[in-house]
Length: 217
Image (cartoon, one colour):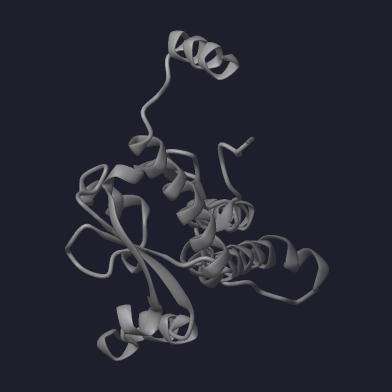
C-alpha cells in the first residue's frame, strides 16, 4: 500500500502574526522619512515663498538612506510573512522559517497534546504589545510537543523563533497552526506509521524469496 513520504505545509501562525504586526509600522516609517526628505528637497521649487527648514545635506542623505532601508525591510517582511511552516515527514517533523530549517525526529517526541494559547501564555503575565498580541490569540488551540531534548541548543532557537514557541524552560515547543486538528491527525498518522515500522522487522530479499516459495507449497 502506497504511503506518502511527507505531509502538507501548515503555516506557523505566531510567525505570521508577529510579522503582520510590524511590517506596516516599518513600511510607514520608511515612507514618511522619504516624503520628508522629498518635501525639504523639492517642495520649494513648486511652492514660491515656501522656506524649508535648513538641514545639512549629510543629514538629508542619512534620513533618505534610513527611509529606503525601512521600505526595503517592510517589503521583505511582506514577502516572507507566510513562508514559515511545519511539515510532517515519514520519520521527522520539519519546522521551517526563512532563516531556520529544523528537523525534529519522532524519536525525540514523547508526547503531543493540544491546549489553548491562553493557558500556555496567560496575557495578564505580559505587558505592552505582547499582552495585546496574546489576547488576540489566546482562544486558539496550539499543539505542544514534549521532547526528550531539543535538536539544537535553546539559545540558538531563541535567535530565530519568538518566545511564544516555548511555554517554559523545558524541552517543549508550541506550534500554532490554522487547523490544529488537521495538523495533529496528519502528524500522528506519520508518527504511528514510523513507530509501527520500528516494531516490524525488515525482511531481506532472501527471506522474501523463501516466503514466496513457502506460499506456493
